[in-house]
Length: 235
Image 1 (cartoon, one colour):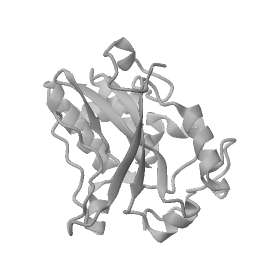
Image 2 (image 1 turned 45 degrees about the vertical axis):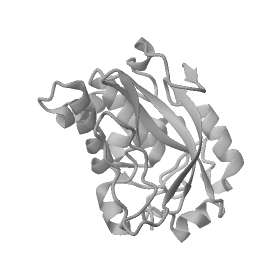
Image 3 (image 1 turned 90 degrees about the vertical axis):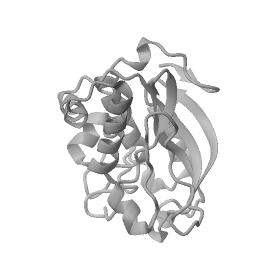
């Protein structure tokens, strides 16, 4: 795995290869990418189509965190139909590679004023979200950041303009809502990876968040943080 802690990655074949997490060779991932791209051939417009397909086809669920490797695979998001910021970024990076677009994973720490009381409680009332995930796509000779986390229905519900992407400039989560209230503050970037750095994220989350996040050994649906019996979305 290539880690670029400062600046932007140096383009290379590693950013097009399938990996365990960015399983762009998985048939479900390939099929989703093909359906999203359709007949488009221009790489920039392909990237835009993929962004909106991932943003709006998969419900954002911050209670869907399960710290086990298989839960962070792009194909798992396709199968489940939902994800949170990291897993939706992993999916976008994977479908980009399946479409011939180099991609990477970026991580940042943020303050999310979009947070509900239920989510604050689950986080142990910590203000900072560590390891907010986004994809970086190499389009038109440049790396651009793309965060497909919040689906359009969620943004409409909370009165927040959805994140838009033109394939040429960064599309990170919006700072203000429709009433010009601050919703998202990016505090620091941690760099870019050619694959998802699961061990780093797992260790940091286990050390930072309450024990409910720690299901690294798996668990059934009644045990998992974000299990079907408790999953209600960001509200």
